[in-house]
Length: 570
Ligand SMILES: OC[C@H]1O[C@H](O[C@H]2O[C@H](CO)[C@@H](O)[C@H](O)[C@H]2O)[C@H](O)[C@@H](O)[C@@H]1O
Image 1 (cartoon, protein in one colour):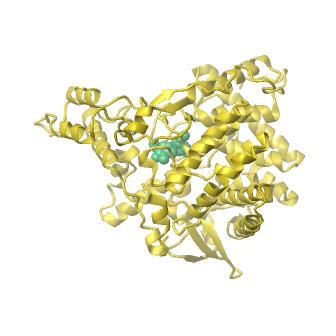
Image 2 (image 1 turned 90 degrees about the vertical axis):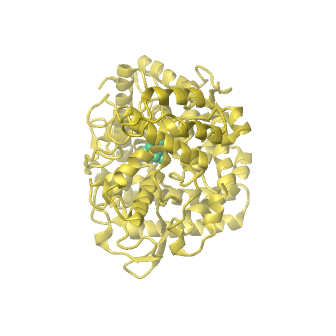
Image 3 (image 1 turned 30 degrees about the horizontal axis):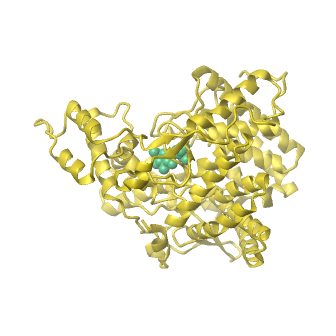
């Protein structure tokens, strides 16, 4: 699995967009099982991920042999439901059985100084309930995985984990940022630090933070927010040892994101070259966790290289965290026009700007002046690139940029017509970064653009304005998007911006509260058109639990409080 470093060593741009991480025999076999399960059980309530998460009870070769020997129905060559259920029970443990529940040592039912600005008794009781959910979502990878890794797609990690919830039984990269923001409100600094050290261990092993801690996620990352997690913990704890331990890993992660796989050069209207980055998974096959679906979606492509290109764009959308969205479609809402690797995304480049600023900050804290200078130069260059390539002077927001030709090309010449003029919440993510929120005149313009964008709805910020049926589109609202935009507005220091942030937070808290009261659970995403309703669409059933939603509710309540006389109902 030393995939990343060997792939990153590739220097030719044409090979960088054909890189493929090797799969494992276990994952390939479980994909076969998934295919058979779909044929046998049918697609109602079918979740393909369940099958690639099953831990084996016996060796792969014994299991495979038994699978081959299953009696097939003479009518269609498949396996009967009874036989397949019996085989699964005999040869596999349950999905998620290789994680054991864990009680975090730093959890206390009501931490000292917890949400002092929340005065409303019902809201406070609910906030304490949300805080207590960290116990439900805490797990430890079982020793079995360490002992017999060949029987598990789950990857071993050194520390306990906090999972998003439901079908997401393992750690996820960018979810962890908002989990940590919530844990910090819950005063669970040790648990937050342990999560960071798990992610660092992935960089040490693979060269980057994986999408999630599973064998089938080793072909891609997710939005790179590790440096921001470390920054938030350091801001509260002042733990300089953490910074020292993590800085080498951050430098490695920065190199991963700036290798040929992700880097693109744009020559702007004045002839200046800018290096920016895109998502690109190291994969050109169906995603194992959704293999049956991806094969079906790709069936319209007859040519193998078109299929491979499409699969890479699907996996790259998963790397973006926005799986799936019209943002990545050349002809929305036609899913078959997905072209993620042809987009230079605003948010990814904002995160990388944040990473460069954070690395310079950490290097300063430990007295490494050479790294400070280098990363300040990199962040200055990226700020210029963001302004030059993404900024729209007429729309007063940053727009994703479409590459018009082969994505393997090194340099592309900027043209106005290639900016994606559609409105997405991601168009406002740069405001979350210091160089932009501290620019007073820019903030006024961006606040006006956000207010009039159509994104601000009755129950929060919509992901986009297009109702495509995909989950990262209208009318879904996602906790991370509410938080990044609101926090950017708050940090700007503008009174008008703070009022808008508070309006967003109030709507979001109310909707989370009411949906929780109705269903008894916290939801992965909400419908921003209807206060108190959870979201839908996409390729899997709406999930509950839910790590980042809990984190954002706690972070919003800490920032804005909740007065006794403000109603919490929709
Ligand atoms: O199984 C389908 C996809 O599921 C994940 O994506 C969604 O859940 C993640 C966990 O909350 C979240 O980080 C992501 O933004 C969601 O879209 C997974 O990350 C994908 O790789 C996977 O294909």
